[in-house]
Length: 331
Figure 1 (cartoon, rainbow, N blue to C red):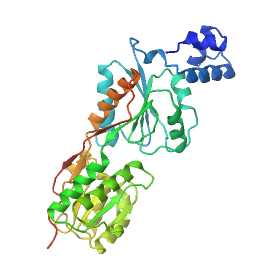
Figure 2: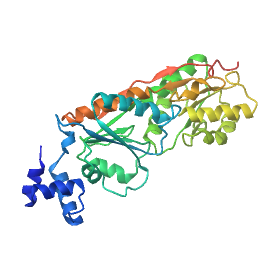
Figure 3: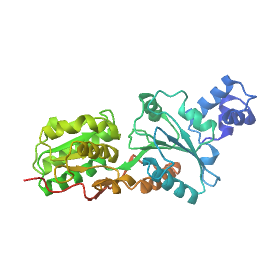
C-alpha cells in the first residue's frame, strides 16, 4: 500500500510537504496540493485512518434529500444501525448533507483524502451522471444505497425491491384480485425499475395480465397520488400497489375523498413499512425494509472493503407485512 513517503519520492518533494498537501495546509500552494492529491489517487493511496491498526477510522456519510433525524423518516433507522455498528468498531462518523442528484462541485476522491476519510457511504436515491462517473473511477472504499456502479471499490447495499413487489402481487392475487394497478416512483430511478419488474413478474407468475393503463409513474411522495387514483378506479382497478408508504398514504387519502372504503371497495399496499404504516386508517399492508439491518450491513461491507475484499452487491430479503388495507375484492 503506497505511503506518504512513496508519494514524496515520486514527486521529489519532502514528506512534510506531501503530508501538508494531503491535510489541506495553507502553506502549500493550490497547484502543489492538487499535484499531491492527484498523484496520491493515481497510486491508490489510502489515508492512515483506513489502515488496519489505526484508530479512529474516519468515515463520511453523505445524505441527499432524505430525512434521518426523526424516527418516522426513512433514513432514521439506517443511520441508527450504521452508527451502532460503527461505534462498536470505534469509527469516527461524519454526516454531510449533499445534493447527489446534481452535478458535483468538487472531486469526491479529493474531498475524501483531504479530510482523511477512509471510506464513504452515499445515502441518496438518485445519483447525477457526474457522481456516477466519479464512482466509476474512485479508489476510496464506498458503499451506495440501492445504486449499482461497476467498480471494485464501490458496493451496493439495499433490499431486493423486485422480490418485495412480487410478494405484494402474490398476496393480492391469492385474495382474488385480477385488476391490479401499480403506482410507481420516478422512471429514472433504479429502484422504480426493479419494483416495476417485480410487479410484472408477480402478475405473470399469478397468471394475470398487466394492463398498461393501470401502471403509472410519479414520485415517492404523498401528493403524487391524487392525479392517478380516480383514473385507476375508472379503469376497474380493485387493488393499488404503491412503490412507497408515502404514496400509499396519498392513495388512502384520495380514496377517502372519493367516498370509497378500504379494503371493501379497493385494496391498497405500500412499500417500506415506515412507522406511519401502522397508524393509517386502515393500517397499511406493506413491504418491510429492515432499515436498521441495512445500516449495519453497510458497516460490515465497508469493513470488508477496507480490508481488501471486493463486494458488488448485498441485498437483504424483504418481508410482507399484512394489515387491514388489503382484503378480498367485491364479487
